[in-house]
Image 1 (cartoon, rainbow, N blue to C red):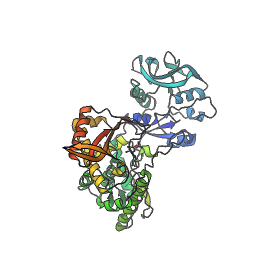
Image 2: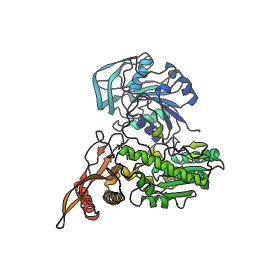
Image 3: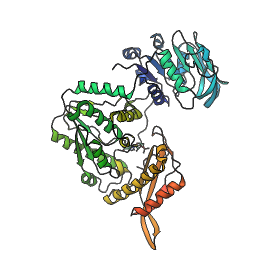
Image 4: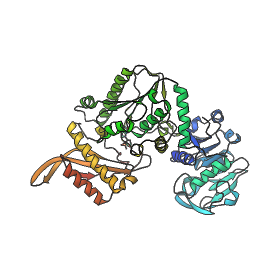
Length: 512
Ligand code: XMP
């Protein structure tokens, strides 16, 4: 690959992916690497145009804190340290880091010496930055100039122009920092000499060439779920190798209303072998009497692999299995391991009994919004490209308790009404995921002159950037009211609708 690259060394900060997003938005390719792997050999091997140190939760002067080989500052590669990364640069090069007299957290008015700075060149003399620190640089190392300060922080930024070393105590990657992206861009262009030519069009071209070279005249197999990642992958492979690709779409019967047909429709004119397997009855049989969420996930995963393997067996030997892995799936963090709350396997885990030589993952370097941009560049329909995330096990984990065909029918209809109303009113655009959940609870209602004893439907809509934390969406009451009225009126089996107003944490986005 011939792209210029920025290496982001991860010290466990919470905004690391955001740093990577910003760098890529500036048109420069970058990768995140845990600090433990960032030895000089590895850095030299990658020969990045620049290095960024991320923030992190530690104090540099503790022995147990992450450190870096001082040799990194002698490679002649420009380095930008952010927050902990800034303190680490100061500490490693002989400056002083101490506990600040007062922690700075949040929006902070900051002064800049734009005339003496590469990062802040042509930017205003003061602006708001986003701070989040208890330690600070109290004295810069020799050779550095102070280029920014706040009332609390004597060194909010420092630069060593001769060695191309730059450090900022605040977070330029966060939206609350005014001109933050310009500062990052200035580092990329003026310090690192980046050309800013990374775009989805150029990515597609290179990826298609690489796939052709690797695959030659061999055959590729893909599990197509109809989600954004596998759909964009199918489109990319189709452009690269056309009919050498067989895409198997296992319809497990837990898709939303009309979704199975929409997937088929989207791919019918593409140059690929598209196979749809209608396996609803098999999946329902495997879930008969099951109400535990993790057992549901496990059985769906197992059945999926079985169906996929059977279909794959029909087409004989393939050489490559394509997977829609994307960058957030493979980023290793610089800090500890997180607890597993749900076994979020995507339907389409790795089959054991398909005879293939190698896995190819052409999207593995892309963030989600880049995958969407690629999908658009390749000509996929907007509806598919902008589809909100949908869990692999589908509606099976949105029906609390046992799954029946009748409950699936009820949920599909109610969910379709909810989505239609949100989309029609325009509020859907500001919401990251929205869906209905069929609870396992029935209650008394009155319809016409008669008593009903039907299910309660829960509506869920959240705003989030990373799906790790989420807020419930503040949908205007009249819209919620219309949804409730339509659902109760049009879907038999529901007589009560509630709206979930819990954040994540402590709840999760899905109910199971
Ligand atoms: P939770 O419910 O854990 O969900 O807050 C976070 C995001 O993950 C999706 N999700 C899943 N995706 N298989 C998937 O492919 C799963 O089993 C699964 N469970 C949850 C969820 O829709 C949300 O976007």
